[in-house]
Image (cartoon, rainbow, N blue to C red; front, side):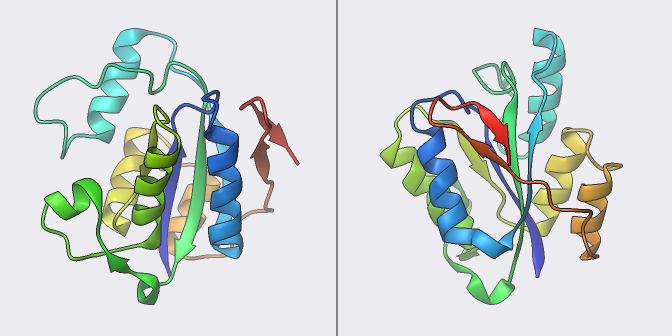
Length: 168
């Protein structure tokens, strides 16, 4: 299996809790863990990290929107390569033919929950790049997920109906 991420950048959006629940239903046992990442303290710190996160697609523009202004949810997944299907959205526009199922999930959540900002990785390489941009490469969970090793104790979080994350 391969490491992937779903990032819910706007967990207080009215559709975030529903998107989270749909991810749990759709990917269940493939979800290794869920973490809340703290909001960035300053605008310059946020732009620096998000520009690095979206380096390959941002076309020399600053990523300066709602992402990273509030704590955001990261779902860590391990997906079988055999589960890949047709690409949608930006991955399709970049000429990719096969994508993990989280690609179609992300596109569907954006359509269902207008204004929800959600990201899903399309390759293990993008997952590594994203973890590096978020400064999570030395995180024990991230290291275990990338190596395919047994992950530390699974502490799940969930997004409540109000959009805030709860431990559970």
